[in-house]
Image 1 (cartoon, rainbow, N blue to C red):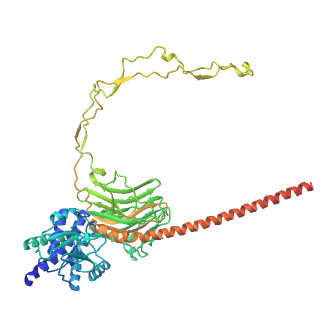
Image 2: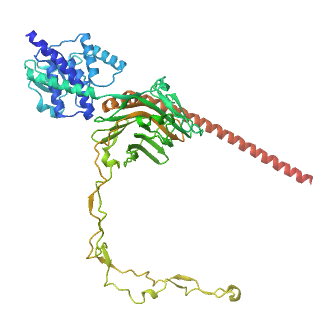
Length: 606
């Protein structure tokens, strides 16, 4: 019997690792997975890796599996094995390494070490299993029983017949504690319902999905502005001859989540700013997502200026030394603020024309760091995210004027002469009353009298003042009736536009080679950082979490402290100014008294 367990045990380990990678891939495809088919797959793989026979193998891969499913809200139940097997540390390292490669994303050494330490210290006796969702109940394999744990518990200890022992070691009796009968547990006497050929089929399918996803995802540009950033970025000569070119400095700003997390900041005020960097290789997004992401912090309180980024084609290479407003670009994306006009630009260059979105997307206009993400998909759909949340999405066909209309008015058509577009007409039976126009609007006031001091020779002929005529009814207007011959507003018939040519490659930019900022700012001080160009929207979210979300609370706290200090300083300055004004007022009073005494003395002398 032990010999039969070994190959299936190894297969269970491999399937669990591959399933983790596939779950990451599904998150990349769907964002947050709540799919019934995916739930069935995880159930099967979990059962596979939990044990083929009722007393073998592990719960470790399950916790591994759920690490990819943190977004599922109901993943609170756990599976516990009666007999447990602990992996040696060498095997755990291999599994972690396989997982890191399988997700198809860049894993930093620090993150990898955190994974090592997490798995080294974890309790391998418990395996997460998310069957708390209602749709999972009908598809649970035979041998699994549905229970549930108390809210806030991390796991359950071993399940004994007639009771449940929680993670604190306290036994819960179903007769006295109703929560003891809720959760998920595997009956130890029931053999798995998964047949060997079914397990092999699942493992192969997951492996193929993992390989396909890993081959797809790629990061083409990633910039976090370390101390060697000047080796990768080139300041433009644009506007330098005019003396209006601004500069860029390397700083984390006045407030930040991490002092080492620096970006590049515009300075001084009222300048043009232009700087660019070259991708190591050309990015052709055919049949791939194009993901453009960066962070910006307007800590100066930008009132008028740009905060957007540009990606440029390889054809602009000869112009990058003097990169400026006239340099052809592929995409311009990011916030632009000036007075009451605030919007997020999403501009695509199509056949030499820069096309603005028809949608009005509002940016963040506070003094904190925010992350802006643009995702352009091969389906010619797009998403705009701010702080990892979708704020706008739709179709490139609908929200930009890439293509001329499919149908146009027939230029040969003309409105028929007898076509009546009048919805109402004057009532022929309605006649103006006689004498209507003879009634004046104003008449002489009969109560007015000529003033006694009025001299006709000097003042002219006296005329009584005018007043409103109470009998005046205004201009006569003929009544209207519905037009019996009304045919509606005439429209030319539609015909196919001979200039229309469908293009299913609107999303496609075959030669993205440069990234840069070209801005005008009245109030300088914006800090740009964490630039990313990739074809993996899932990795972009992870990157945003690492470089923005994990630091935002510390940045907010530091900004609040800085704001309090500024407010206190302002109050002290105001108090000092008030005291100076009071002193000036006292001096003025003394001067007035001295002046009055001097005047009295002069009078006495005179």
